[in-house]
Length: 158
Image 1 (cartoon, rainbow, N blue to C red):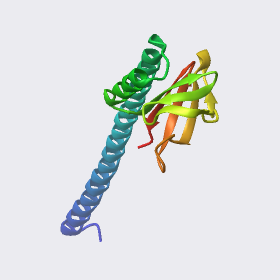
Image 2: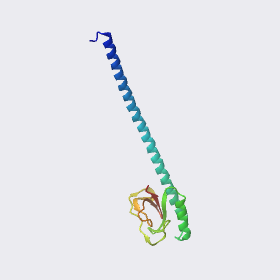
Image 3: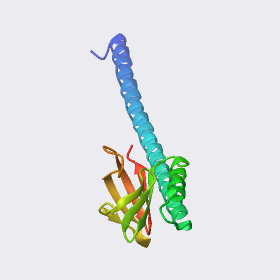
Image 4: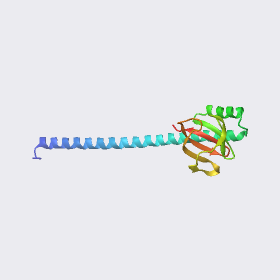
């Protein structure tokens, strides 16, 4: 059967075509896998950078709240609101006294003072983080809260 030149030629051509198709499919699968891994790495980098920007903004706002200790009056409420309005990721800023929330950018003076949210994660340097917290003065709104010393900020959950 392989002695006929036409049969040998057809079988060699068919085998070569099958081999070429298999090699093309394997290369295509490898290329797609490599692209997906590269895209996943880029996406992970963008999430890490976004988390750094959000955390940096929260820490800067906490530092700004600590920079000017004040009583919770109209000027302090206006300052807290300005801090939030000038931020990109923050929902609220609050001042604490004796471990209780006494002033927020949303409702102003909190009377009687409210308990801060329970701590889900405690970091070095006294920073405390709470997740999925109902926002004081904003029914139905939830956020992540970062608290340090006498300052607290809420970060948009979405």
